[in-house]
Structures are given as C-alpha cells and as structure tokens.
Image (tube, rainbow, N blue to C red; front, top):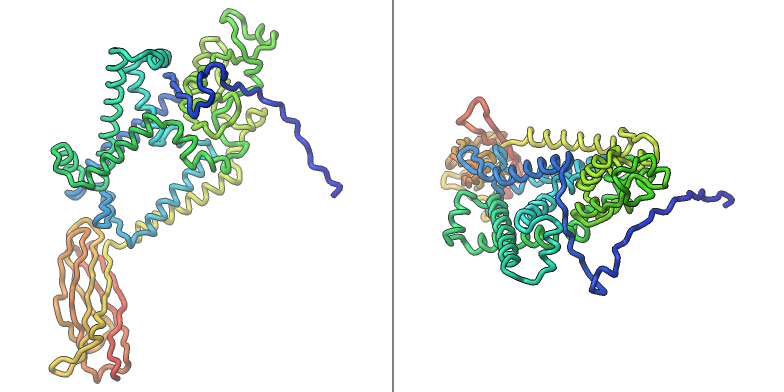
Length: 479
C-alpha cells in the first residue's frame, strides 16, 4: 500500500456561461437557438452528403425492378424486396447481419472521427438544416429573425410566419409520403392520398410521420440530439486521445479578446492576446448552441460549422487557419495522432469479418425454400388395394421476384407410389401449397418410422437450376 497514485496538474479552462441578466425568466427550460448561416469547405461537404442521402431517400421508392417497386418493405405480406433480393421472416439472420455490420461501421467511424455521422449524414441534422434554410429565406438572417420574434404581431410578421410553417408542413408531408412509400406501393400512394381514397391506416401513418418530422426538425431540433438520441450518451466510450473531433486550440487562442484588424498578430501576442478575437461566431453557427471553446461536450455533433466560421474570421484577420479544427487530443498536446491503434484496428477487423459473412450469407442464400407438413389426423390410412398411405402438404416458397416452375421428387423410399400433382408454377414472392400422398406396400416397411426426403427442383431454367431437399418420415405404427 506504499504506492502513491500519480497526480496530474490540469490547467483550468475558463467557461463562458450565459449572462442570466439577459433573460427575463428565472427558469428557462430551453432558450431558442438562432443558427447563423455559414459557408466553407466543411459546409459544402455536409451539404453534399445531405443532398446525396436526401436524393437517394426520395428516388429509391420510385425505381422499378422486374416490373415491381425495387425497394418495398411489405409488412402485411411479411416480405422485403430490395432490388433482386427478397427477404422473408425466415431470413431474420440476414437482417441481423446487416444491423451488426451497420453498428460496427458506426463504431469504427466514431473511433476515428467522432460524431461525423451526426454532423454530416444523420436525417435529424439534414432535415433540421433544411428547415433552417426555409427560415433564412423567409424570415431573413439570424439577427433579422431575432428581431422579428421580439416584435409584436403585425402583417409582415404574420405572413412570414405563416409562409414558413406552410413550407415546414409541406416538407414534412412530402417526407412522410415518401417514407410510407417504402412500405406500400408508392405509385398509388400519392394519387390515393390526395384524392382522399386511401385507407385509414395509410392516412394515419402519413399524418403521424408528418407531425413527427414537423416537430423534430421545426421545434425540437437540438433536443433530439442532446436529450433523446442515445448515441450522444455512449459515444465517449469509443473516443480516445487520437480520435479526431472538432476542438478549439486553447494554447493558441487564449487569452481571447477583441482587437483591431490593423494591429499585427505579433503585437497582440506580446500584449497577451491569443488568436481568438471573441467574436462568438462559433457559438452562433452551432446547431446545438454550445461554445466549443469550453472543451469537448457531448452536445457537439461534429458538423464543423464552427470550423468554417472560425476559418473565415482567421482569413479576415490574416491569421493562420485551424484555431478550431478537426484534431485530436494528442495533437493539441503537441504530439502526433496515431491512426493505426489497437482499438481502431480491432473495429476494422471485426467490420471486415462481419461484412464478409454478410456477403457469404447473401451469396449462399437459395431463392427457394420448402416446408413439409405431415398430416397427423389420421397418421396414416389404408387404401382399397392394401397400400399404406401418408398425406403431406409441401409449402413451396419462391424467394425470388420471378415466376418459376418446380417439380417434386421423392428420394430414398423404395417402392413408393406418388399420388397427386408433382409440378407447380409459383409466382415471385409467393407461397404455393401442394397437397400430395405417398403410398407403399406394408410388406416393404421394416420399421414404424421410415426416413426419406422430398426434393424440389426448378425446371424452367436449366442453366440456373435451383433445388432444395428436405427430410421427412413415413409413419406406420402398426408394425
């Protein structure tokens, strides 16, 4: 017990908290955030990703494949069509693999570059910035919006607010219709909805998701990121000292304070001023309203808006860029970031393995599945010519999206007689019930339960022939 725990001296960071005297209410559960517009490289990248995923979301349900909707999650029919791939409840393991791969991809990206998913690709962020764009076009810049909200209601304020909310609701409605179009044929959805001929549940879900989109992107915004989304809570478990996050270089920026443009950077440094001019733009452009100069905070979504805003100020002041940047704790301390580190390599290896297993699962998946149902009432019966007969029903599931013809064979049952239809035409994504009977002379049966197998083969495409075999039993307990 003689060992002593080493103590590390940490320089305190000056936290700039809001001035309580500027608020009339003694308790404010949420002060509204007026996000300022910003331009820059990271903003262009964020817009590119936003437009790409938004465009993909809007276009995918309209694409046709094999004369049907390419992406359709038909919950009623328990069938998910993803281009040439059809997933059924039996393919739950495949869906589990997809979710596992997505989770490890998120873990890998978070370990390397923090919450870039939240800042550049998350739907909540994308729709929030779309709604903010409508605000800027209709109500004006940040300062104009603040003054507009402080004014009493007049005609100018009324029409601007009305037009803004109409734009919000229209965007939410189109979003909701597109989203519901992933679960019901979208070519009929829009026509039936706007002609008031949709079913009750279609109308219910469209209105439900419209309200959710309008509320999340229009009103809740950063509340979803800071209080509801669980990702913000456990992301720190994946961070380390080499994770790239948006950070403020306090050693370079402090002591912060205003100064004139004509004053040289060297003279400011001699007077004890750092590069931060305390313009507060990094706070004004932040969609979650935080001050990145106070250090890493779980509310930060790594959108990089403060980076672009600060770089713009540094350009105007003729200072080097990068006062706020995507950097790591190691770099801020003067070291070199280690890209290849055990945690990141571990996530990469697991991600590659899981992706490989997912690809193997899809490649080895057969587009045909059968289920043998034995009729047990009665367990067997005797025909007029003395044969013992068992009755079966074969469920043939065509897991492809094309119509195929199949033939049924019986293997490993010597001397049997097949009674019933042995061929069936099954449409893509359909289940065909084929009743049949197997009869055999009791003198050829040596045990109460004889194992044999049914074999089903496709017969319409010999080049891509598919066959499935399933074991069953022929019962005759009176032996």
